[in-house]
Length: 127
Image (cartoon, rainbow, N blue to C red; front, side):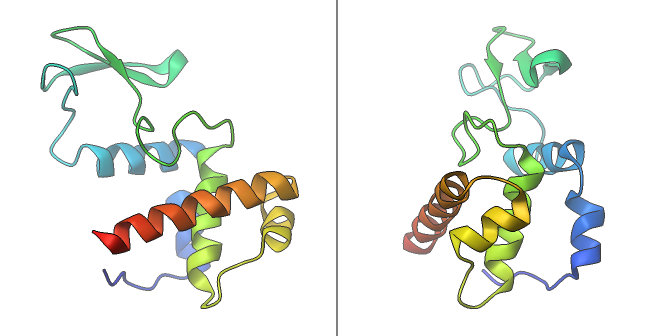
């Protein structure tokens, strides 16, 4: 899939905060609006304190990060989005050491983030 090029300044405007990243992820996850994975209900209430949505019909709680590569992560979403940007902006990718310095995380954390992104990209390419 070919994505349009955007500058780093535009990337910062779109994904520079945790809130903007979460909103984007929610829009991508449910492009036609919320859909409950249990009962297919179309209405949900946000639970802001826990970053969840609760289905109005069956009361099932689901996160926009559930079943994604961001699932159960303690790393802020904006750091994940920046890692994706750094990885995609260079033809050869980015090393874990360089990513750790840019993202302000340990080398092990950067390696884990990059590995998960590469696995997701490989899975997308195999589909």
